[in-house]
Image (cartoon, rainbow, N blue to C red):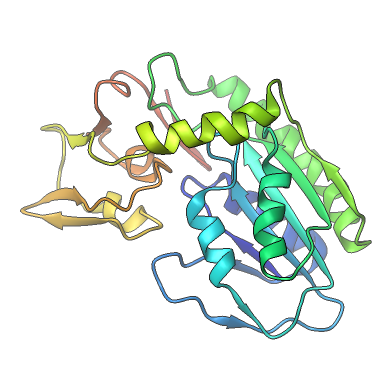
Length: 253
């Protein structure tokens, strides 16, 4: 069984690809709903697929896994994470969450996918060419990872990057304390009140009020609302001004 969380579609694409190759069921983490009880068969694996936010598994995913109800301990548990470049010590950080459930993290894999986080000056999307290249290389990697999963291979196969420990344990905390907020989101006059932002939010953190989106403080900065807006009418302070949009299957530069 595969459970995934995805804001802009990168992790959904990887989850669906792994599911297709392994034959495992693929289920979206309904973060905003109560966690259901999942039944897994003896010998069945549990895969968690999600993006990396500031060199760590998103807190909403960690909280979901802590609340996850299974009928038995999975015989093989793995993490498959998507990132713009590297993941730091994400596997070790997530292992503490898995261990708290009495499970064991047997493997971890990373897939480099197009950038989506552009909430700081200097942060930008990949060029269309780089987007295509990253997706093509990730798709090639799927077969090898799926083979390892089916054979329950125990391995940490990720791109860590420089300052791995510092980024996961120090930079991540700074990101959440200073930068992970929805207070800077606002709309321009280009907003057409379509509600796509509210519908695309995986956390149900946006409602439409008087024809405009309103954020309610439960944001994880997945940027789904920004990237799915058909008019590019949503911005995060001034940091996203003049920047394009991306979600899997669509790009605009």
